[in-house]
Length: 270
Image (cartoon, rainbow, N blue to C red; front, side):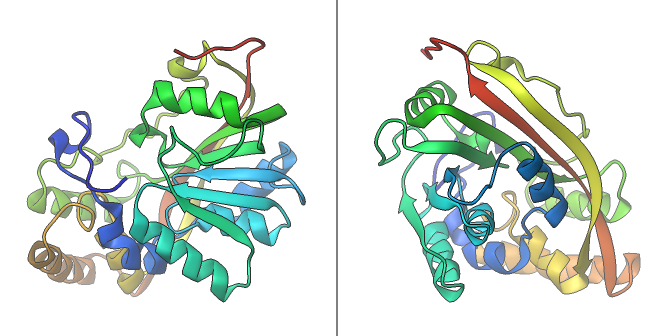
């Protein structure tokens, strides 16, 4: 999302992911190999599969699927993110179509995709219109994959301390203190989709002090929301905090989940 406000996110504060694209690309890791192994077991990411990655950001999922031989398109509303995604794909010699577009108005023909993925971004979409678009774009037998890759402040003291500092600089940020609960089947999906696959598990993700600082700068509540001088002050305080908490290298516990959906027969969104 780019410069857009949603009343249920951070008290309506404007969020522009394009402002944090550099840190996002350098320091925000994509899901680990174990995530893609599980998706592959559920039929997602096969060579030749036509995949649309919604809210692609810097193209982390899109690039991984392309390296596996899938035919990939990535969309994001933030132009800065798409620029980073294109540059990264070019460095890897990956043939991926990246477009600046919202999730509810994808420049593609009906039934163009065998799978549509949305990782850590579904909450930002206009859901009724996006559901309509998903139903339009999926080919017969196609699947929608909604996934998350989230750290766990209630189980990881480094995350808890870092989030506490974020709130000192941005009290409106409502992404803190995630409870870690993942519903087996969210209510929004039930009228339109059948759940055909689901997984949830935890894994430690390696960081250094520098990369964790970058990861937190790339947070919605910091880099995508605050002024440059506030971001610098947060980063300076965060560096001091980490020196008191941990050594140079450490793991951050993350919870990964994915729901695999197929459209209900004669499903119509409204």
